[in-house]
Amino acid sequence: MMKRLLLAVVVATMWTVNSRAQMLAANIDGLWLATLTPNIGAELVVGERSTLGLHGLFAVKPLGKDAKIYALQPEYRFFFSGRPMYREFIGIGAVGATYDITWKGKVYDGTALGLGLTFGYVLPLKPRLNIDFHAGFGFIRYKQKEYFEGDQYDVDYIFDGEQRPNASGYVLLPTRIGVSISYILR
Image (tube, rainbow, N blue to C red; front, side):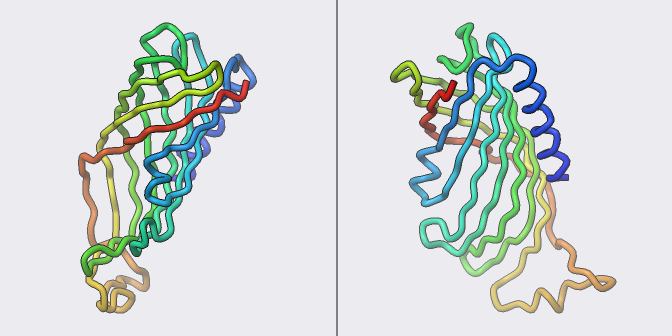
C-alpha cells in the first residue's frame, strides 16, 4: 500500500512538472529538527492557487528515546489569497509511516496509513524565503505488533509460520504540526 501511494505521488509530481510548473520550493520543519529528526520537503505549484507537496522524515532515537520512525506525507494545498505559497491555506494530505517505538516498557512495531486536513499560514520573509505555520489532523489506520519488553514476541505470536500484528484500528491523530522554513528554488 505504501509503495502504491509513493508511486501515485511520483507520477502526479512528474505530470505537473512537465505540464506547468511555475515555482518549486524546498523546506525543512523546525519542530521536527528540534526533536533531532531529519526531514525534508518539496512543494510544487500546480495551479493559480494550489500546490502539491511531499514531506519525508526519519528518526532514529529522537531525543534519545528508543524509537525508529520513517514517514512520507504527500499533500495538496489550496491558498485563499489568490496566489500559491502565500498566506492562508487548507490542505488535504496523506501519511504513510513505519515505526518501532518502545514507550514505558511497551513495544509498538507497525505501520500506519491515513488521510487528513491541514490548515496553515505562509508568511513571506523575503522574495524567496517563507515561514510556513501549519497544523493538521486525520484518521489513521494502524497495524502493529504490541507487546511488553522482555516478551518472546517472535515465539508467542507466530501463526501458520509467520508473525502477524496483534493490534490494529483507527485513531484520530495530529498528522502534520510544524513551522517550516521554505526556500523557493525557481
